[in-house]
Structure formats: structure tokens, C-alpha cells
Length: 216
Length: 165
Image: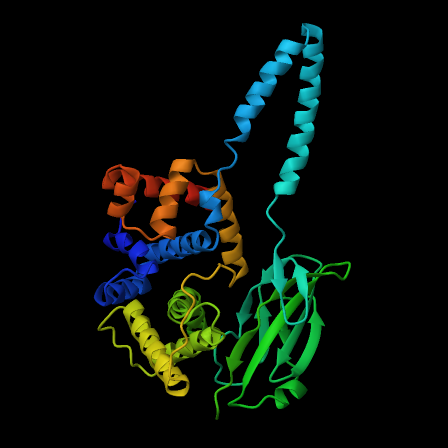
């Protein structure tokens, strides 16, 4: 993969070390260069994670434990007979199985928590497809990305307060005329979708997306 | 015809929304609650200008979107300064929490950092956390500047590997 000459500016840009001129040139560049933008996003997360968690880089960990283990092993070896050692070996193997089976489960990625207005739920997010930008007219239908089978979606539309709420098993819904009649051109609206599993538990929530209906 | 237009618009939004959002967040700070509104506003300005034929292809589309974004950010800061005397100062390096994706990536970065060998951790700490230049890191560690670049690049490579796994 060939390297883009702008790549060297990523660190300087994120650490605010560039001159105004270089900064603007780089900004214009990443609006045009997909590869640089991807690298920029990734580096941004890396730098912000480091800035928020410096202790991860200053603490000594992991390595310090293994020498102790080595000494322990040597001591154990000198203490037992061959038969006992074999038994210890089997026990250790069993222990290893337990460790390998249980630890990974504990180290599995932390559950995702999604914070909505009134609740914290475990699960993933829903991507809203349309409308996500300003509309020329009152939208006739709302669409979002399908999450899977057997899922019930609850859609809510808000202006200042809840305007309409409905549930469906499809990943789109048509707006009833009576709701359309209550929507006014020139006003801002937002909408949100929640997904419920077969047993009725909330499994995912979308972000609230705002759109404006152009004034006539 | 309108279907095709709709599709083009969707493509444009999918492509530029993240870039515009990144630029806006960098300028205003991720905590600023106006960010989402501003991004939506910029996107609709772009679409409006495209539809009215204001984009004539003198520059690339990316540059066109960049210009609209930068102007809107300048306007926003100007408006705020008028009301508040000082523009809101964005927190420079907020913990990546703004989206689920950012949070997940950050968790992976944390995992990768804690598994790095001490020499890599040390160099990342000096270079990114303390923001020393490569030359300063080099004299701190008693190695060549070139070696510092190698260490940083290799550490980043290891982190990227964790991000992609």
C-alpha cells in the first residue's frame, strides 16, 4: 500500500502542533482522502485513550508475575517424587482447562451499554436509514436497518414531546395520515427506534435523529 | 429519476457525515450538544447547494464540502462569541465515549496498551501523553530519532492489529 504524504501530519494535527496553514491543508485533504480519514479516526481514538488512561502506560504489569511462577515451579519440582509430580501434572492440566474455559468468558468484551433518555440497556445500536436529513415534505415512511428475525421495533417520533409511537415487525413503517396531519412544515422533529427480543426484553436502541421539514 | 437522486443523496450522506462530524467535534469538542445539529445543518446546506447547481466542479466535491463545513464552524464560533464573550473552549482530548463504536474501539486500544512491552509503553507515554517531539523522546531515552519513529510505528501497528482482530 503506498503511503500518502499527508499521513505524517496526522499526529501533529491531533496534538494541535501544526501551523494554521498546514492544519487547513490537512483538513481539506482528509475531506478528499478516504485512507487518511480512516487513519485519522483510528489515531484519534488511540491518542484520546492514551490521554484518558495514562496509567496503562506507566504501570508495570503482566511481566512481573511470570518470574514468581518460574521459581514456584522449581520449588514444586524439588519437593515431590515422580509419581506425585505426575499427579500434580494432571491436576495442573485440569486447572488449566478450568482456567482456559472460564477466564476467556470473563475477559469477553465488556457488555455495551447504551444510554437513552430514560434507561440504560445492554445491547447494540440500530442504524436509522431514512429520514436522517432535512426533508422537502412530510416523510411518508420511516426506515431503519434490520437487526434480525423475530424482533419487534418500537418507533417514536417527537417534536417537543412524543408525537406518535407505534410497533412493527418490519424494518420500516408508513406514517398514518392522522399523524402526518399533525406535522407542520418548518418544524424540527426527531425519531428513535427501539428493538425488543421475542421475550420482550429491550435489546437495542437507536440514537435520536433529527430532521426538519422545509417550510412551504 | 427521484429514486436515483435519493440514492445519490444517501451515498453522499453516508460518505460525508462522519467526516463532517469529525471536523465539527474537533472544533467544538465532543461534549458540545450543538454538534449533531450543526452536522445536520451542514449536510442540508451541502445538499441545497448541490441541488441549486452551486457546485460547478471547479474543485473536488470533498473540497466543496470542506469549505461549507469550515465556514459554518467559523460562523458558529462567531455567534457564540457574541453571546458569551468567549467561545466555548472544547476539552482537548475527551475520553472516546461519543458513540458505541468509539467506546468499543477505545476498549480494544486499552487492551492492546496493557499488553505492550515496557519499551513501547514508555515511548507512547512520552510521545503522545507528554507530547514530547520525536527528538525530545530520543534524547530522553538515549536512542536515535529514527529509533523513536520505529518504536512508535511498531507500537501503533500492534494496536491496529488488536483493533482489527
